[in-house]
Image 1: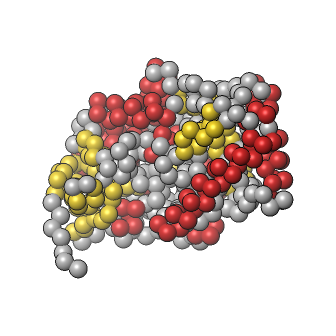
Image 2: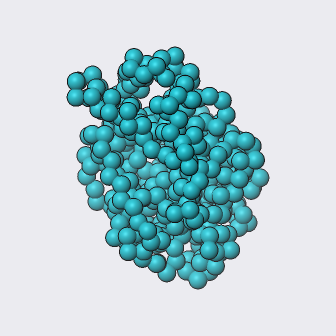
Image 3: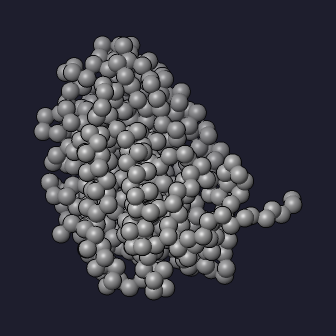
Length: 429
């Protein structure tokens, strides 16, 4: 195969790969440190799993009525509230949002902070000088382009840049990954009906959130009768504006970091989306006149590969409230493990503060590269808690601070990083 010359089209201090919740906060955080930041995203909009994947609400802001995530993540919620595009569900602190407003708010926040955007840019490779990443290669309509930076942040969700750079990954079995779901939007649902009013965010008494047991039992019966292969939940959520709801009910097992596997999974999930909607219309008057108006661009992926970092946070660490020398985020969501082959879900709550250490963001053996979001170094139990949006946004902001520290000093000083995290209010005191 003929070698291609790849032009360097961007030169920056810090390059962030992935424009989802973690990538957004990482880029904004680094830019507010005065760094020249490029944010590369494979789609044409920011938002990732949240705004493009319809994974709604944002979970993980509050624990037992106390807000444990602040900083840029909470500032972003305030922006959505000011736009009339969000609702905060107390006391748990789940945040429902309007997906289109999420995209606009993210774009505005990034550009106002001085972040340069490179959308429609799919990560395809990287260049190393020894053990240091010097360039990330992306593909777009203009062909391959290289981004040169002093430090890179992998916010792809699947540790794509870390893998391309040769970083070690956590050992795990692909057949044990939590299932992926294709979320979608329904209109024409009778939201005021008794069946639904206590199981949709912000309409339940006291702000409760729970799956709908009547629908769950009906769908379980459909599985038993062979009318349906698999489902989860269902979890229904208000879109804040209008009378539509987002629906999280489909699930399929597989390795979503494998292209062929993801293709298979998403084809099945799309069939399931229509099949389940037809079943609901047939059984429940509240759904009789509903229709699918939109589905996520990609499946919402709960679990794929994760880096092997300098430290690995574990479920035991969370249950015991281990306080690391330099925590970058505090978790609030329970350890939430979804069975890959049934509708089962195992929830384990913890009462003590649970933290993610900064060393879980640093891949072993690779220089100039950090992980942010759900691909940080964690075992399955800890990962099942920290993977939610509020937590990964906090991790992203701290990753931006870490990258700025690397640019300024060539190394990360835990004392300086702690002070910066406190000053930003990433972990409210």
